[in-house]
Structures are given as structure tokens and as C-alpha cells.
Length: 195
Ligand SMILES: C[S@@+](CC[C@H](N)C(=O)[O-])C[C@H]1O[C@@H](n2cnc3c(N)ncnc32)[C@H](O)[C@@H]1O
Image (cartoon, rainbow, N blue to C red; front, side, top):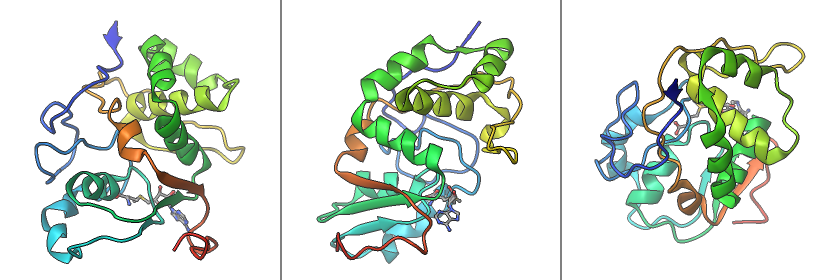
């Protein structure tokens, strides 16, 4: 049986994933694999950032590569507003922010095995926290971490046949602390209440 993950890591090397990542060794990387992630931009991003970051708004959060880098390498003084139109994704971030220990307990029960994967894929979770843990599990063990649902909204990505290496999730509760998380499409969200 392959373990799904180890749940702690503190260096980029430990968390190594597919794709190019130019963040410093000390930066904890995103815990989700997400198509179109912007890790490859990190090498050049500092020169474009203001010396003092006031409020931070990330309307297309996805795997959060840019946010996680900025949060760990710069000081954000004001509000942090993170949003995405993917409801399951935002539910996942909310529980990682608020209930990280319970999310990890769920994840540690899950096995990185093909039969178990398809049981999990068919499962309808009872609670939103279980939904969050299932979301992470499927993301880490599915084929290429693709997020794809059919017309009925049912997740239909096949098993990825990979051992998940290291998942940097323990620190995420802290990194997401004091973020405002919203499941909204970018064009409909109003920033007025927070800015
Ligand atoms: C490529 S990912 C974002 C990558 C991320 N910003 C990073 O730092 O790596 C794009 C995300 O935008 C979201 N998205 C696409 N259209 C959107 C819209 N109109 N409003 C909000 N989110 C949207 C998708 O659900 C997806 O999670």
C-alpha cells in the first residue's frame, strides 16, 4: 500500500512537485495541484511588488501559488481577500484555514490505492469538512490533479497511479489565517466592504 502523503514539510525540496517552481527554499508550496498554476512566475515577481502591500486581492485563487509565495515572503498589512468560482475549492480552503487538524485526520485514513480512489470518487461526503478532505485526496491522487466534473457536477477524473510525495498542509492553517475566502466569480464580487 502506498501512503497518500506525509503531512509535514518545511522546505521546497521536501515538497517537490511536477513543474517549475522558482520560489525560495523556505517557501511552503501550494498543497493542491492545479492546472495553470503560476509558480513559474515567482522568479520575477518581486520587482513588480510594492515595498508595502496594503490589501491583497486574488480573484482567481486556484492552487494559490502567487498568494502563498507573497504571504510567506512579504508583509501584507491589510485585508487578504481570496476568491474563486470553484465552490469545492473554496470550501477546501475554508476548512484548511479553520479546521486543519480535522482535515489531516481524515486524510490520514485515506489510502493511495486504485480501488480506494474509486470508492472515494463515488462517495458523497456527509459534511463540508469531509468534502474538503476528499477534495484534497482526489486532487493529489487523480490523474495529473485535473479538476473535471461532468454535466451533473460529478467529479470524473481517473486514478493517477502515483504515490503522492509530500504534502505541505500542516502550515497552511497559519498561512491562510485571517484571509477572507469567497466562492464568487471575479466579475460579481464587490470589494467595497473590505477596502
Ligand atoms: C490558473 S488558476 C489560478 C492560478 C493561481 N492564481 C496561482 O497563483 O497559481 C485559475 C482559477 O481561476 C478560476 N476562475 C476562472 N474563471 C473565473 C471567474 N470568472 N471568476 C472567478 N474565478 C475564476 C478557476 O476556477 C481556477 O481555479
